[in-house]
Amino acid sequence: MKNILLLGCGNMGGALLKAWAANTAHKFTVADPAKPDLPEGVSQVDSVEQLGNQIFDYLIVALKPQLIDQVLPDYLPRLSPDSVISSIAAGYSAEKLAGHAPGRSVIRIMPNLPALISKGVSGLYAHGEVPETASREIEELALCSGTIVWVDSEDMLDRLTAVAGSGPGYVFEMLRAYVEAAQELGFSEEDAKKLVLGTVRGTLELAQESDLSLEDLRNNVTSKGGTTAAGLDALNGTGKYSALISETLLAAYERAVELR
Image (tube, rainbow, N blue to C red; front, side):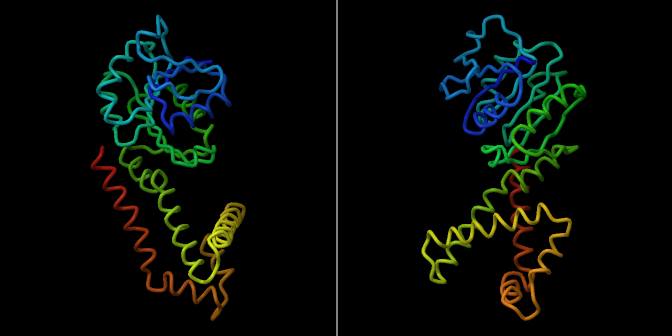
């Protein structure tokens, strides 16, 4: 069991904390003056003074990036000598975090929105010489909210952010447009949403359970000269849709680099 301090507890931090508290035996303390709704057994303080003499094995930063420089330094003396700093804050580099605590290792976790229901995809990046035990324990925390992908550079974490971190936004927009198009074909909003979400849910589960490639699965449902072929030709016959997806990811990645 580890003694873990969570610095900040907004929507994402709170969702991850619930998963961690439910699936591990670690002791958690939240430092957040907003008094968030916390799982049973989790302590909360408004300021560093209220921590008493407590020393923590891990500190996880879940603050808004613009608050980190102001808040983090006050809590660093509460870490054990060999503790690792972790962070779920987007747009704040591991190098900046390490700059606050020279000699300490940092692990960044980049979760995405489905972590709210423990079905997220999180990217992990270790900066500095992170002990194997710490990597394993932080990995176990990340696995509580879904699946994980380790990357070997902060640049790759920015690329992962463009794909998975921002990805739910792209999917929601695609679903919105899909539902709207179904309504234009004459369906009510309720039925259009039922048709679209049911189709996407079933297709996703089929893709996850199948050993076939996505291209093969697409081809299996596409008869030559049929309705699916006509729809696919309109969607991506000229390659515009593929190009648009590439442009979308590139724009998100370039913005992640700017924020770094």
